[in-house]
Length: 311
Ligand code: AMP
Image 1 (cartoon, rainbow, N blue to C red):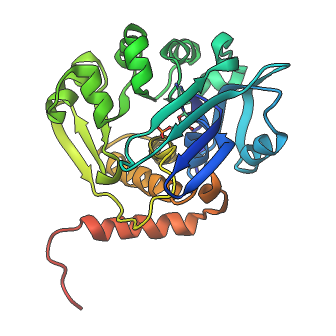
Image 2 (image 1 turned 180 degrees about the vertical axis):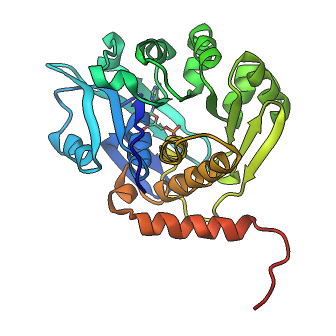
């Protein structure tokens, strides 16, 4: 795919310690911005904003550069420690149990965008403190499209800042549990309607292994089927990969309309389905465009429901 539109992505850059029924990784490359930037990079050029300590290995930065991701917006703090998240999945692979969140360098981070970043057309505020998301939004000039993600922690402890973010974005990516927590509504259609009232025109409700639903101002625009995987190795970063694939595709399409937004949901689902097939970024490291297009076509066949004429 060929696009000149940049996707600007801010979010966590992390060491992740993750245990699932398939095994365990310690201090592996992770973070919401990393998963979404790598997923988006298969479709469009990406500019990243984040922070790491000087314990962050050069090989991780080299990997991001190998995906043609612009990392000038990643600050390296001398003597600082990189954000560390530890989590486990048991039984319900849709729900991570957070065992540790060490914000480290994120505690005193104030994102400052390199000059040319401010003109980015597409902006994705991946999961991070909503005050930092607002800080980035304040610095971009006139983006065509803005989107955000969040998580239960920020809904609990930074609700007001998060509501400010929601007032200012076009799209929110949110999972079912977070939508219920944010709105107090058990019914997801009502939860989506409450979120529309706060601000975003589009609510992309991620339902883990059950697919995703796109709500457009109180009506359902589109429902994407889940990809039927027989083994999920590590669900970490599925939501971020979904959002990154979605934003990367929309940026390559150049504009958001009824057709491009549906395709974006399916490309997002495609990227998430690949990501969960291995720990950390391991599946993305060997993923090809051909594989992405192949699974996208499979998705088409899965959701098509009118009679297919036999040749
Ligand atoms: P996901 O599985 O898509 O919800 O996101 C998993 C990623 O979120 C992991 O790589 C973590 O490093 C990152 N993460 C976990 N907790 C936080 C947090 N409080 N703020 C930002 N990122 C986080």
